[in-house]
Amino acid sequence: MRVIYSVGSTFGGTGIGNTAYRAVSGIYKAGHLYRLICLDYKKTEIPREKIIHFRLLKYSVWYPLKAVQRYVVQSFNPYVFLDRLYDTLSLKYIEKCDIFHGWRGHSKKAAKKAKKLGAIVIVENASSHPLTQHNLLKEEYARYGINFLPFTKTRLKSALEELEFADYILVPSDFAYQSFIENNVPKEKLIKIPFGVDYENYNPKKRKKDDTFRAIFVGSIQLRKGIQYLLQAWDELKLKNAELLIIGRIWPDAKKIVEKYKANSTIKFVGFTNPKKYYEISDVFVFPSIEEGSALVTYEAMAAGLPLIVTFNSGSIIRDKKEGFVIPIRNVDMLKEKILYFYNNPDKREKMGMAARRLVENYSWEKYGENLVKAYERVVKNGRGKIG
Image 1 (cartoon, rainbow, N blue to C red):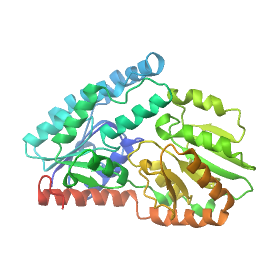
Image 2 (cartoon, one colour):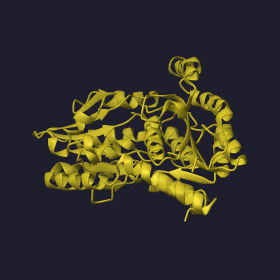
Image 3 (cartoon, rainbow, N blue to C red):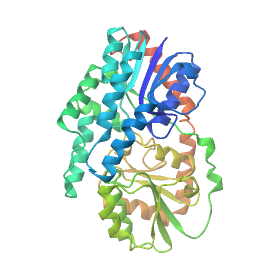
Image 4 (cartoon, one colour):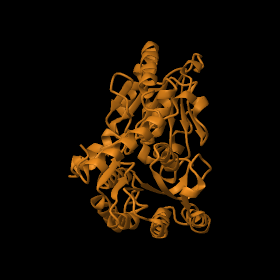
C-alpha cells in the first residue's frame, strides 16, 4: 500500500503538526509511507528523501501575513491564502498511490489529482462539521457583540465541496462524528479515530498536596473555548482557599472579558507556557469549550491524573460521572455545581482522577497510528464509501 500524506503545517511541530507526525510515524512504521508533503518539518525518524516541504513559503508568505493579522487587521485570516498556495504547490508531487490523506483546507486540488490517478481520498477534519462550527461560533460572537464570521461564504462553500469530494472523512470524537451525521453526511463515509497522548510523561502520583483547591484551564483564552463561562462561574462561587489557574495566550476576542476578572485575586492568568507542572498542583481540569474536534489538553489532564469537567463539544473521551462530568455548553450553573462538587469531595477527585488516568492509557499516540493504518487497510479492502 502506498500512502501520500499532506499537511500544510510544520510537521513535527505543535498543534496539527504534532498530530500529523503521530499519524505519519505509524504509517511509516507499517511500511506504507510513500511521500509526506508539508509546509515545513522538524527532524524526526521519517527519512528526508520521503519529505517534500515548502519552507520558503513559511518565511516569505506565512510570517508577513501573520504580522498583518496581529498588527493591522485582526479579522484578517492568513490561513486562507497560505493554504491555497500550499495546495497549489503540492500538486506537482502527487503521484499514483493507493491512499491520499490530506487535511481539510490544505489539499483540495491535490486530492482531485490523486483521485484521478486512482487513489482513495481521505480528508482529515479535526474539528466539527464546518456548518456546525460556523453556526456555533457565529452565535457565540454575536452574544458578545463581535461582528465576525468564522467562515466567509466562499471559504465555507470550498470546505463543503472538499468534504463532499472525499471518499472518507476522518474525525476524532463523538461530537465531531455527530455533527457530520446531523449535516447529512452518510456514516459509511466517516472514520472516527480519537487522538492520543504520551501518558508516560505524566506521573499522577507526583501531584503536590497542599491546602489550596485548584482548578485549571489550559488552552487559548478565547470565546470558542468557553472561558467566559468559566470565569463567571468561578467569580460567583467565591470559594475559600481556592484558585483558578488559566494557562494560555489571551486572544483579542476575550481581552475585555479577562479585564473584567483581573481584580479577582483567586484567578491566576499564568500566560502561555508548558502546563505540566501546573497539572501537578491542581485538583480538577475544567474545559467548557463551545467547539472542538478533540482537545489534546483533555488527554494531558487525564494522563496527569486529574478529574475533568468538560462539555460534550470539547470532544473529550471521558465518560460522564466516571472520569469527571460532561456538561452542556454555556451553562454557568452547571459549571458552578460541578466545581463545588470536587471542592467538597476530595475523595471523589482522587477516584475520578485515577479513573481518568487508567482510561487514557488506552489512547497512546502509538495506538493512534496503529488505528489509522488499520483504517487504511479496511478502506483499501472495501473500496470507496464502505468502511465496514
